Each structure stands twice: as C-alpha cells, then as structure tokens.
Length: 243
Ligand SMILES: C[S@@+](CC[C@H](N)C(=O)[O-])C[C@H]1O[C@@H](n2cnc3c(N)ncnc32)[C@H](O)[C@@H]1O
Image (cartoon, rainbow, N blue to C red; front, side, top):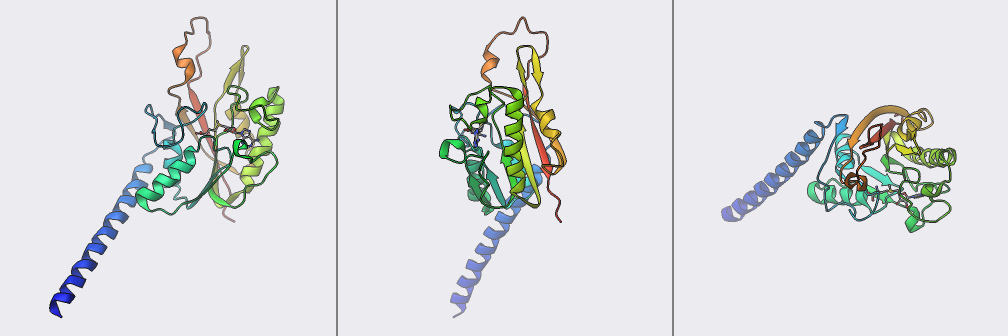
C-alpha cells in the first residue's frame, strides 16, 4: 500500500514538474517578446516557416512576436501566400502548447479578399498584401498585384483591409505589413496610405519598421540612384476598441 502511494506521489510530482517547466517556458517566451521594439531586423530567415522560394515571402519572426506579445488566442491570414503565419502558429502550438487557432486563405487557394469575408473573429488578423505590382503573383483579375495604376491598387487594398478589420475581435488587432515602392522616379508610400485609413481600420496602435534582407535587388548595382534604396518594410498595427 505504502509503496503504491509513494509511486503515485512520485508520478504526480513528475507531472507537476513538467507542467511547471512548460508554464515557465511559455512565460519566458511571452517575456522575450516584450523586448521587441519598433525597429526589427532578422537577417536570417527561419527556414521552417513559409517557403523562402515563394517570391514575396516574409520571415515569420515578427508575426511570432506579435502573437506572443499580444497573447493572441486566434489568428488569421487572408493573404497567406506560402503559409508563413500558418507555420508560425503550428510551431507555437507545438513548442508551447498555446492552442492558438488559425484560419488562412489566399487567392491562390480560391479565397478572394476583395469579395469574401473571413469566416470568424480573431485576436490578430495579419495581412501581407502585394506591394502593388512589384511581384506579380498571378494573372487573376482580382489579384492586387495586377492593378494597372496606383489609384486602383489603393482602392482595392482599402476594400481588402476593411474586410480584414471586420474580422478583428473586440480589443484585437489588425497588422498590415507593407513596403513602399519607387517607380519611374516617383515614390509611392503605401505605408502612409495605409496609416491614413485609421478610423476605418481601427485605432493606430503601433508602427514597426522592419529591415529587409535577402531581397533580389540586393544583388544589383545602383550607381545612378539619387534617392536611397528602399530596404525596409512597415508593419502598421490597428487596434479595435474592446467595447
Ligand atoms: C506578399 S504575398 C504574401 C506572402 C506571405 N506573407 C508569405 O510569407 O508567404 C501576397 C499574397 O496576396 C495574395 N493575393 C493577391 N490578391 C489577393 C486577393 N484579392 N485575395 C486574396 N489573396 C490575394 C497573393 O496570391 C499572394 O500570395
């Protein structure tokens, strides 16, 4: 009898120790994400998240840190491309047993953000749209990267982002990752134009400058360029009021 009790106690103690270790590691991850500032730079892409061969793919570190920092329990990415956000959520769930739910879509898999609503409400909607026509993702008429001029692109981007904002749960956030474009001597500041949508998309809660690495243009020479080359992206975060 005594031996059986001792065995049960030892088993419970091991279980408790494992549980405490897991809680400590989650808390450590939450704590680490609090170190993030408004400038981020991740020279080495995490190879387990998304597909580096997919043009326009972004590293998942920023979305991981936002999920942890905001203690997100549900996330969505309606322009998921190669699935970076999906992979980050899967990794967080495996590593820390966070239980974050995820929904993802993309025009590539038949979800058209111009016309369709996201199927739920989420603590975090992360969206990484095309930077106008810098990378042409498809010839589909609804693909934002096929927009013939900047005015049309912006009109369609606004519609897509409004759809995203409607899927943010009260108190949740919409994070929009964009890059500016220089074309035929003109600077198109997509980040500014997204920030100007404040009100429609929620309250501007932070702006994060993300250094760009491994971009194709890094390999080219730019001797004749007067203005500095664009080597950053901007993550514009809007918060929906809790009420
Ligand atoms: C910059 S990429 C996203 C890359 C992604 N973050 C990743 O890491 O792989 C933009 C994506 O928007 C998608 N897209 C363009 N127009 C769309 C639309 N109307 N509805 C849904 N997705 C669209 C493209 O197919 C492309 O996959």
